[in-house]
Length: 163
Image 1 (spheres, rainbow, N blue to C red):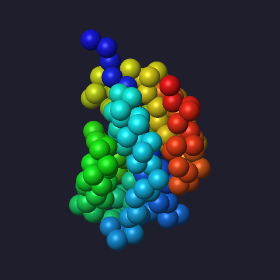
Image 2 (cartoon, rainbow, N blue to C red; image 1 turned 90 degrees about the vertical axis):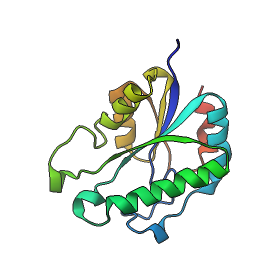
Image 3 (cartoon, rainbow, N blue to C red; image 1 turned 120 degrees about the vertical axis):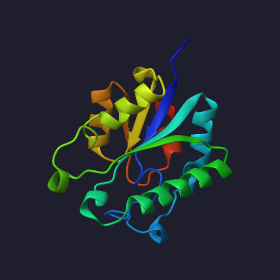
């Protein structure tokens, strides 16, 4: 059986509007609607859609895991209305100033490696799209193709980079 392929997405600045700091409240959470068609096309091409996001605000106590789960539920339900299935949300709840080092906080590849294992993915057929260089570093460390975009950039503009 052939291994699956996936698109890993960073969250803030890729899926939802970047606020310049942590998105701490559900009412400040705004999904970027310009990515629906591109993500649907990628899914139709056989890519699983996965999310890998640093959420250091949890360690700082700026929001709760319940609030984070509500945000992810909002994404899942909103995307589903557009025929897009988010297979899993990976998040790092740590922050180096509050919890010390971990293996999951980007640029470490832990979240991507977990996704590769959980979904039996072929890393070199996967992509990680993020708006920070740490996203690309994590991708490279996991053997995944990294694509750096600008904050809130429409994913349709980089679709040609995905085979």
